[in-house]
Length: 324
Picture 1 (tube, rainbow, N blue to C red):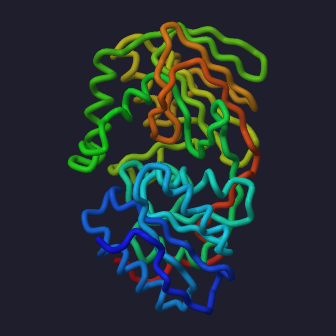
Picture 2: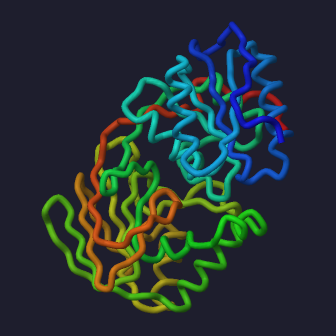
């Protein structure tokens, strides 16, 4: 594999990004030939005359370190080639700065990219990274730890348990396998959810605290809304309680999500606010942006409004011609 340090290739002309692009690539995410992807990305950036540096991550947490290095060197865009975990590492360092996060989603889930409407295909994604516009989005905080997409306790934390080796081998099917097992043998808890000081007590298998409204999968053309009318820039967190106790009830709730009838399902209870406290008896495992935490409930989630700049397609322009 090519060296894991930053490439020293630099260019002087920046079509849309004056400070250049720092590329952070997780070689363990998705693609089987990371060096091949690196060469294609470098070739495209070179052809556009963009100043850039390129670095592979070496272990968990390295993406945040590399992003801080990029900020110190004056880059105004950080392009992450990886999954939601690597994207989150970069986002942690970018929160509250003027520099922006761009994405080449090559992981298993790629939930943030899907929610932001990024196109598919390397050339189109690189075109967005270079010519796209900045959009400010909220960032959630769970016990002080940032998340950009969704935090949750219970069912979704069970779903993301598959080891990285299994996800690399069978991809999204690892999540399907875990979800099937969790649905067949649901773990029911007594849930207490406090939103902006107002408490609700329910029985169920999980609580989702969403900053982004949609969920996606490889078979879906676009995300389906876990949260109806949710927005990533309204200064609020959306809470969905999976108030189900059996496999049949879970399937009914899932069907309601897939068909856009969320509000008509008794198994889905929704709340919205700036501060969310979740307690469970028995306690439930907790995840943020697809990463299982070494903790269980209780937790407190808050929101930092418009704290992160992300690069999204410019709606005023058509898509770049051609693709790979």
